[in-house]
Image (cartoon, rainbow, N blue to C red):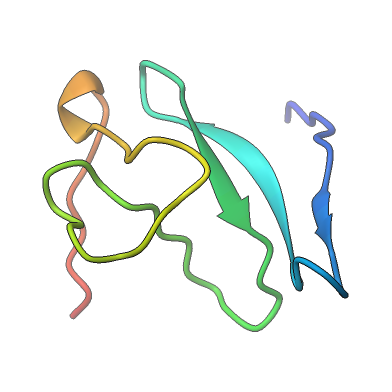
Length: 75
């Protein structure tokens, strides 16, 4: 198993959440992933799909730049 350390950003007072930067897809697109200990689901905003989900640190993930993406439904 390959284990790599990554910095944890944020705080519990001003920002009120913590996040790490992860790289997703075959093109390694950076995404800020909020560390949420109350959830077992990770989600990122996708370009062309997520139009009303607010502003984000990174550009929306472009699934068509990745040759390894897979669609999963919420059901």
